[in-house]
Amino acid sequence: MEAEIIMYEVIFTACKELIDDAKMGCSDLVFKEICLEILARARNVLPREQFAELVQYTSEKMKEKSLTVATLPL
Image 1: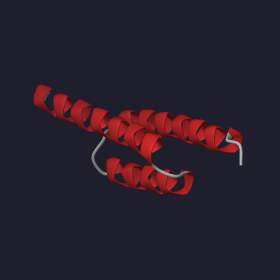
Image 2: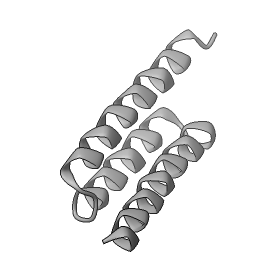
Image 3: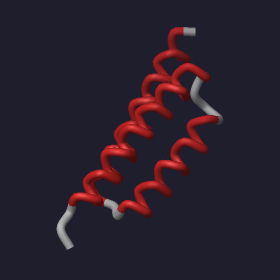
Image 4: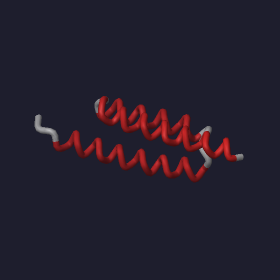
């Protein structure tokens, strides 16, 4: 049971790191696509509570990315 909890934490952390990396290195549209792909895969492996937390984290990062893109000068 404890090994399972550790595994979920590792997967959860990896998802967050992938989202953070994509936010820094991708255009807005590609970033959103990557986020959706990560969430689709995470839904199959994370417990419901952790998945909900990852959805919240991802939505915050998507908003931040959109605001960054919207404020860049042309």
